[in-house]
Amino acid sequence: MLVVACVKQVPDTTQVSIDPVTNTLVREGIPNIMNPFDTHALEEALRLKDAYGVRVVVVSMGPPNAEVTLRKALSLGADEAILLSDRAFGGADTLATSRVLAEAIKKLAEEDELALVICGKQTIDGDTAQVGPGIAVNVDLVPLTLVDKIIDLDLDNKSITVSRKLERRHEIVQAQLPALITVVREINRPRYPTVPMRLKAQETPVEIWNNESMGLDVNQIGLKGSPTAVRKIFSPEREPGEIIGDGTNDPVGTAQLLVDKLVSKELLHL
Ligand SMILES: Cc1cc2nc3c(=O)[nH]c(=O)nc-3n(C[C@H](O)[C@H](O)[C@H](O)COP(=O)(O)OP(=O)(O)OC[C@H]3O[C@@H](n4cnc5c(N)ncnc54)[C@H](O)[C@@H]3O)c2cc1C
Image (cartoon, rainbow, N blue to C red; front, top):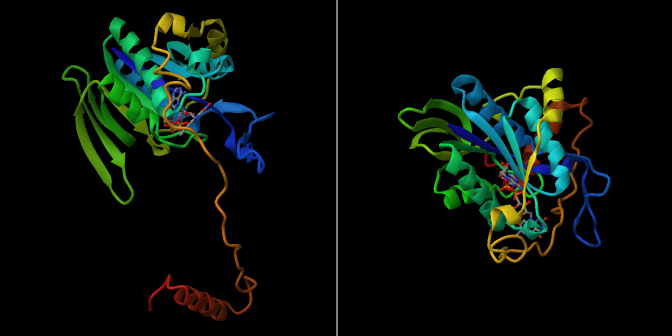
């Protein structure tokens, strides 16, 4: 039984700024990391490996240097790592990205029975949360987003029950396998790699699949297969904050001032 974890290498956005002239992200000199939500996706796949002995394959679409992120996944316990890398895949929007990842997953499913695909809820750079559902549609998997717990996985009867974390409630959903889940941070605490696993990961090859091996229609992938383009990127303007009181003197008077402000802005109704 196969479980695929999709991980994306992203710039550490805590260190990224926006170029005010070109409106693009300034990525130079910024370290790359595994998308934080994907560390939870991988951890969940590894927990299923520990519990059920499933085979865990990690897949990433990205430039050649994304191999570093895949090697990290191997050091944590993934059985195999595949990097989908080709100039033809470059410039992809979320639709074209989902297509390439989906075709890779279909190829893997030809050799092993696919139980589950696990993605992060979203990335910290693109932030769209579209790729997981996009893969599900292309592979014909049941999409279960925002999962904070796998309550039950029944590989014999091919069913999964999960908890979905919604805004003010949880939703318990049962679905048939194969399914695709996208996970939120609360689902688990990712493990750390051990030294022996790190050493083993250095010797495990990361497979590179290019478009020669995948044979995808170049009009459906990369820039050509992307119907959307980013026109502008900018930080939203915010009103400057106002500090009321000095934090120590006259707390009652300060609270009253705050209440008056909120009432005058119609944010509070007394
Ligand atoms: C309109 C638009 C145009 C774009 N144009 C370009 C462009 O011209 N050039 C460019 O470089 N980028 C471009 N991008 C960014 C690129 O499309 C995204 O980085 C990529 O499609 C993933 O989308 P996301 O980061 O929003 O992922 P999300 O949908 O937020 O990711 C959800 C989950 O899907 C999985 N996932 C996402 N991406 C990957 C991946 N590559 N490999 C493995 N798993 C993955 C992960 O598990 C992740 O947690 C564009 C994005 C948009 C929205």
